[in-house]
Image (cartoon, rainbow, N blue to C red; front, side, top):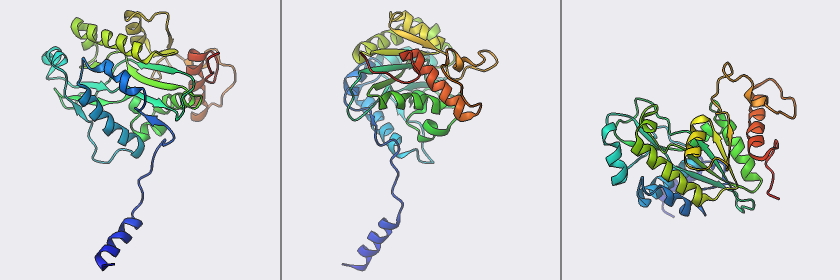
Length: 278
């Protein structure tokens, strides 16, 4: 074997192998392909598939140091509605489906309020993120309140459920901007209606009042449970995570996180842990 080739192979063998994070779970596979059709009034299916492939790689292998948020080209309908806001930061969170290898219990929808963005993000461009940053391994496991949501997702998936993660308002163009624009508000509501119909969930959980109000406008009043948003401040909603608690929790970070995961499970299932349908 030529010396340069031997040296090349030895170098490759000595380089660290990229870790796979949460590799036991499926990201945007199986039923995602049908459910994501609900978003095609906003973006083409080719664009949605393109950003999903990139986010899947991020999910399993982590973010590179120089990573920038992906951008997506809006449909003609959405571009027309966004024309007055080209000087603003615009965001979209790609709905994601997290699944076990062998689903056995149906689907759960977790619905947050909107794809919040910082003011200094690229104005006029639609940047793509995910529900509570689940494509980012650091966010899933160690960043602020985000691990609470990921632990909830994981507990549901490990019980056999698929979990659909989405926002009530599909587009962010500044605080309350979309809600005050009737055409954009109507579009978000109609997309959400189609989305829920395609996902056909056994449970829907609204995180916060904004998500709950949009689900009500979409006609799902009797189909969802309402829960406190994980960013709720302790001074305005003290100890919200201990409402109807069935046990005592340690007064430390791990104890509070577990209490909050159990709180969300109670809103969905009525118990501290996910239960299978009867």
